[in-house]
Image 1 (cartoon, rainbow, N blue to C red):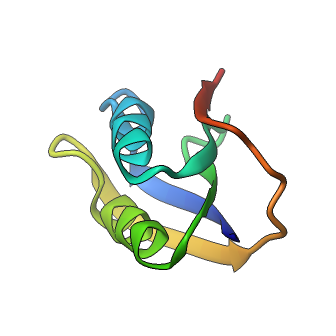
Image 2: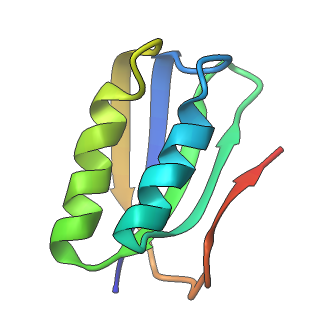
Image 3: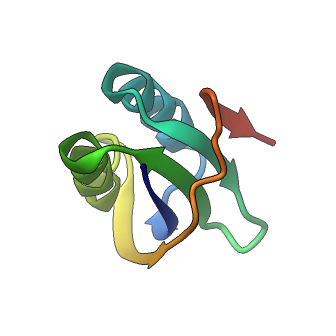
Length: 89
């Protein structure tokens, strides 16, 4: 299982970014979490297998229609064994 940490900046809060990310994660069997950060960014920890994880990451570079992604930083992480994808507050 691969795992990544994504930090996404731009207009990514208040545009249903986390909710749409969860919906896609559930469809692709991606586990982990998404949360808003006080600086206006969205942070995501995502765990999954090869192609589904790549599809999820590619979507995060664009986000939902109302979003504007200016930058996405990605770092490799160790898998933590999450059982689902959740939205953290």
